[in-house]
Length: 340
Image 1 (cartoon, rainbow, N blue to C red):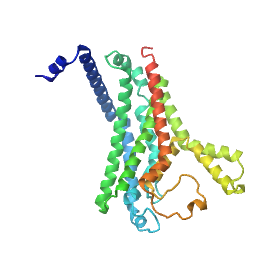
Image 2: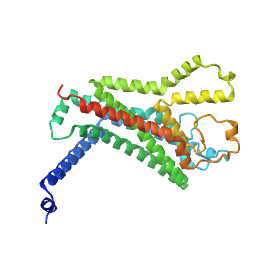
Image 3: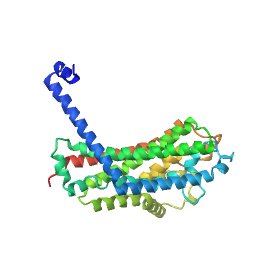
Image 4: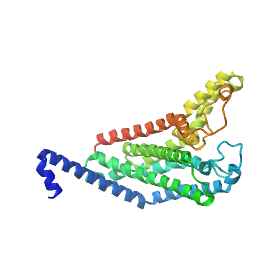
């Protein structure tokens, strides 16, 4: 017997109607998701952004592989045996490491995929026609966010696998489980960081009617938090607080903690702190330490779980920022009049 006929015979009409409704919703969402992924892949801005990040990755890997032998032979470095982590952090000072590049370039990927997510549909007149179909309004927003997030996740997972494969082929060194966990954490935090800028740019595409306005606003926020925020904080605190050379040790530590906490309002600082701690296991703290705290400490890499505990507040902050931006975008879109 046909499964559909069997289900209709044993279920009540209301239950059959509910199952059919859920199946149609899932089918509509899948179609919208596939369409959004196709549009992203075929767009020139996506090709340019992907090419920029891939070229940066190739340059960083070439610099790391060219300088990997002196670093791994340095017995004074606690992390000298962690070859695959060194591929992401070693540099010859001609170009920054790959994770520093990503802290600057990764937001552009999120902004480029989301700044015109909604207002372009409205300006082209396709939003009204789309909402006239038997689909839920939130499916459109979820499809746009999920499609961009799937593409971003695939990109960074592929880059991580390429890095691991290149290191294995060129060096023949087996990867340790701790390195695999740390690289996986680095990829996951990077995806979360890009997702924050994606959700922020999508929210701006709902707030502003013109795509140029949303793009300029998103890029302005990116430049402010990446470049100008640290300069403004340092100038402001330097003008208000006394000279650090005149402070006691406890006062200097409190001052540095306060500066770091203010700087961590910036998503760029949260991301940099997180990935630096994960990719450099010898990092034991993200703040200043006294000599009493360092007394008796053995210069050895921390376990992955200990590094994860150090960066958990930063990662939670990034995840919370991304969730808040997407929730605000969701509320604004659900309350927005489409026909106006």
